[in-house]
Image (spheres, rainbow, N blue to C red):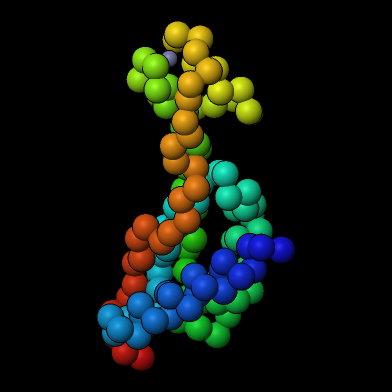
Amino acid sequence: MHELSVVEGMVHILTRTARENALKRIVAVRLKLGRLRGFDPRQIVLCFEMLSEGTRAQGARLEINVVPPRCHCRSCGRIWEPDGFLLTCPTCGENNAEIEGGRELYIENVEGEPGSG
Ligand SMILES: [Zn+2]
């Protein structure tokens, strides 16, 4: 389960953020997750609940923003969301696309409650 190690790192970052910003606890976390990473958002939430227990991130609302991959046609400049592995441009029919996005994995926003408690 790859989700576990990712969430482990995330909880580490969150507890450090809480410490450095004198936050009593983390209230909400927004995570940006590219679909091409292949992670299951439900697994991430489960792992988060498990691993954040006893830390300042416990009970935080975890919002996962799944980012779909996008194709960019080098011939005509069209940008679209690919359907499976078919990368043929819907505008010009060329097979000259590159994939942009979909590999994101980072904490976009953290909300905390002030207080050193
Ligand atoms: Zn095109």
